[in-house]
Figure 1 (cartoon, rainbow, N blue to C red):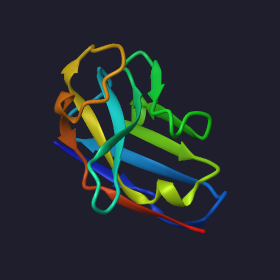
Figure 2 (cartoon, helix red, strand yellow):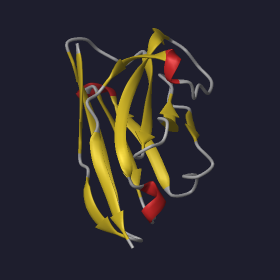
Figure 3 (tube, rainbow, N blue to C red):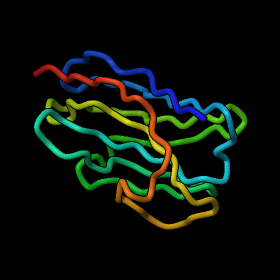
Length: 125
């Protein structure tokens, strides 16, 4: 079972990136999926979550700029990031909720049992 994140890179302030997270080894269509990020010297923090029925939740810092989506046929979740700011610079991780059919918001890393390897996003000022 594996989650592989991709799509990170270097972008200027105001730019956009689209992250992808592809699952393999099992289907995640019944699991909520999330994105977290970790900046140097800081704890890993919640960014966005999408439930198995498509409900979405966001950290206040990214609301209106980021959008999470999923394609169950491809076993893939996406994070569209627009109007990027230097404070968005971090390693971004995708994760799958350990439970199936879980609904509602969950920003705790403890709820996610499957993690991708991370992809670096750097926003220059």
